[in-house]
Length: 318
Ligand SMILES: NC(=O)c1ccc[n+]([C@@H]2O[C@H](COP(=O)([O-])OP(=O)(O)OC[C@H]3O[C@@H](n4cnc5c(N)ncnc54)[C@H](OP(=O)(O)O)[C@@H]3O)[C@@H](O)[C@H]2O)c1
Image (cartoon, rainbow, N blue to C red):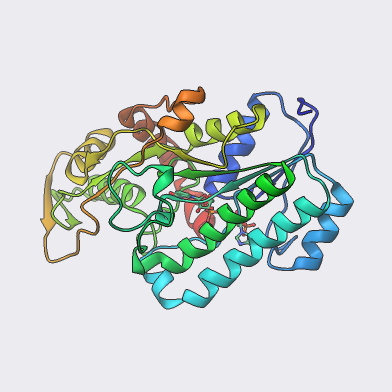
């Protein structure tokens, strides 16, 4: 039985998602939490992971640890993205299974779904068509994690469940312009343009693609929901259910930051997929729903950025 005294191990507790999950659990009264940095416990090391789980015997494991990166990194390091992600999750899942851990929550991402699947993406589209080639290494690793948890669930009747979040943003995001996602990159660009009195901000592409964004604290509430309840199925999407154009995103961020100049779209740069929206009805029907409006989420993230910008370099170099 899960209670407020349950011992919970959050793998990747210093990351954007893991740290949000830690905050959410603490706020809910779960105080028996444990996390280890990658320097303290390298999750690619099977023996180290198994020894740790045998010694600590947590009641719940939340796997928010992964080697993450953009298209460039995936393209340049396909072996590491496939191998290290499989190692991290296999070691955790096997140790959890063999040591009878009560609950295991595996986090993946929307890239597990086929490139040309109908939108909004439903859980049942998994493995129905080819993946997006640029991140298939990462996606294959994540799909194997989903399948391992599904196999353990169906063969042994254990509470192993996978949550697939849409694009996330919030505190402890990566604001490094060379490797960041679109939302934190825009936030930083508008902030720097305001600080330097630059009238125009140039952004990549046409501004027309549509994307969905979820505040990481809403994601953490979905994890909390999976901690508090035994979910009846093996795979759940976690998103807001609505998407906006990249142009609308830019305007929202520009207003939040207080930059008043022009936005220039560099149409020589690629747009990527025209639309990516998840269908999160399955988790919504059970009772979890996103609560942040995009405006509130961006305002809160910008305040965090202002308060923490001196540490952000350090955070991004972790
Ligand atoms: N960010 C998004 O927009 C997004 C969207 C959808 C899904 N997700 C999913 O959410 C999960 C977490 O993502 P995130 O954005 O929070 O990533 P993140 O900020 O980069 O954090 C990843 C964490 O994984 C840990 N880690 C990596 N390799 C490790 C190793 N070998 N041993 C031990 N720990 C290791 C890191 O630990 P140290 O800090 O100690 O090195 C770090 O805390 C991933 O599964 C990702 O697919 C993220």
